[in-house]
Image (cartoon, rainbow, N blue to C red; front, side, top):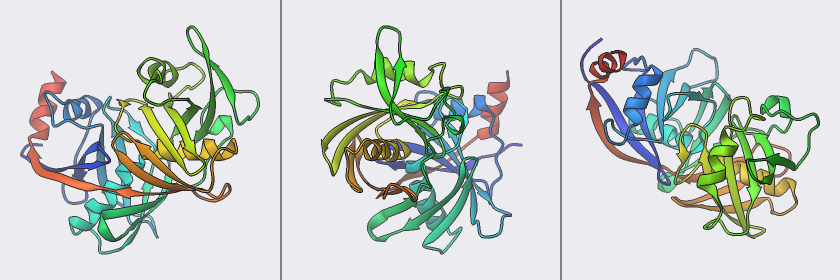
Length: 286
């Protein structure tokens, strides 16, 4: 393959993405090529690469693939899902306001709203350790996770992807960059985990930072915001509708304790471009 491939740079609360339309322009992305695309010095630069694919499944509009900056494919990305919805509408791939997409983590419903907001049905929260996956003999709301020189109490769950959320007194002084990578690669999480740090302001307002699996700390993590609210609800610390402030901006998360988790927030296109993707592929293969 050769020639220039179009892409769109997008962001949701500062969590940034390179989006490829594989419906009209099929792409073949190796882990090395994804790392090159995501590199902020030698590539385009992003937290994740998103790929829009056709769907042959009845009732499903698109396939949605997510690749972290380290080249690994992951099951879920909430901020990316909002960007995905804006992308397929802005690029004329659909005229629907409600879009159903399939990821390797399950089915998602995305709803476009006025003012650039997108509401996402993130699906149900999975607490069973085997489904996270997480190595634990029994299911609990809070687990004590041993680290190198101390232990932390975390709530462990999956929202398409795995999360370990801890409550901290002050998000600004929390050891996100120290404990984050330790938790991300902890032996009890065989596929890694997103490490969430949540400061509770009151029962309707939290502040959250997330050290994302395969990407490091990002300005925002949609699924991490949702996981934090689920964790807070399970511990009876939060009400049903919660304002979540991340470093990149604000999301609204709602969970009734039984049904799907709902997230609402903005998504924006930053710029359009073209890249000699297969020239890069030749270089990464050397």
